[in-house]
Image (cartoon, rainbow, N blue to C red; front, side, top):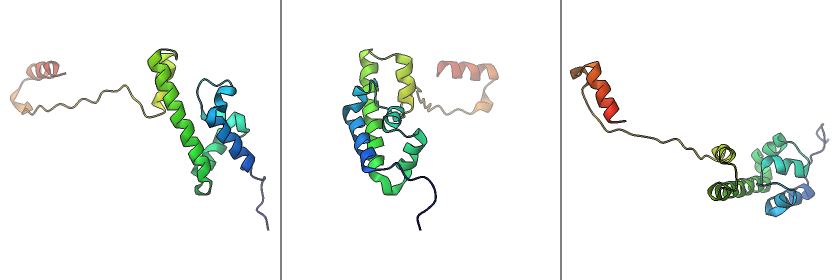
Length: 130
């Protein structure tokens, strides 16, 4: 008995088209960077379907395709951002999705007994060390 529901769109032809997209087809499609949205449009599925296939252990080849798309996107964003050919705000936003951040983690190594100081003295210490 076959399971109910629509037949899967996950076919060798779809995988071939997905490979073609990450292997340079994204440029032929007119995309400035490879993206999940561009891949989804190119192969005719929703982004949710991409992510469903990505999380399915039986579809490892597709996970590899999405990973390659992410790496290519990161590289294009870095190069475009550094060269100034991409809008800085959009590049920053897109790289944030890749795990980049402009946040600075600051660690202070000051040990004081706060009960020995007035509020004004503590404010001065904080101002000096920030």
